Length: 430
Image (cartoon, rainbow, N blue to C red; front, side, top):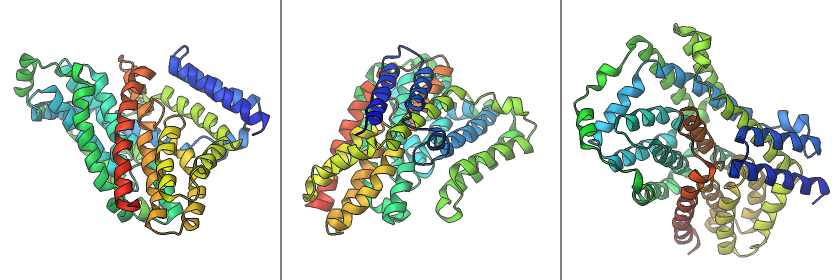
């Protein structure tokens, strides 16, 4: 690697250390790291701001912006209070039952929607129901972020890396359903059981508060029925457009912005009210992170690491698949999985025919998808959903630290990837 590439690695590790130790605010660390990358010429204005491969992913930024506006309008209707009471009553006020219910809902929704969209919708409900039952909200938010990443693995549209893989490998929506969904169902069930152990200190049952919840009428929580129906209609159209992406070919970011614009135009909500709930620090953090990771792609660092991981097991299908799975999980825990998969896909595309092109060789695609998607749970910055949840928590006065998330995420990632190992082995390699 060149001197610039080594300097880029040092800058990235320095910024990452500041984010992990929380010595400075994560937004300042990300922006500072991005600035250093530009100063040392690891990237430039063109690659950083205008390249899909090496720069800020504006699709992600504007998807978040549009959905934050839609969620902000929805909050004014009282629908989240309604859902909070409904969920608490279905769980009969039992904390663990509530977590399982929220995990299943989040994972299921993430299979059809972008996982970031899902956590944006579920997080407000979580705050309200935890407040009602006097429960610590952080464990529930962490569990939902992880459930969204696991659930998003199941389908082509559930996680952005899957879309990249499908495009390169010529895979269809039904291919993902047949090859990944059965495993994801098992992983969600195991994760729900794992939550019982990981978050056991959060399950404090208060019979008095549970009785109060059971006595509530959730319909009374709706504050503006007209705005509710307008918002739900727009949200339903947005979700339908997400699901129909393979047919309509509208990017999720375009759909979210159109939905947000329509909601502001058709209702009495003012522009100021609509953008009041936008998590601007989260959007800026993402921009800085994209520039830093893009610089590693631009200087060839990500490509070198990916080629080394693939080349280490060249000529041995079983070892190659396992190296792809665990290597992708490890790298996706550190850098965003979108540029990683974008860089790794061309390499896998060459490896598959070289390995014979059969089921064993094509298992490399599934190993890449599982490793990249599940590895995002390992750290607080491993996946977009994690960053969004941490930003929402901070805004609502219940900050989740980097290690507060990561100490659970490492356990979940190792467990889920370990379960994916025999699945790949038995189905494709045996």
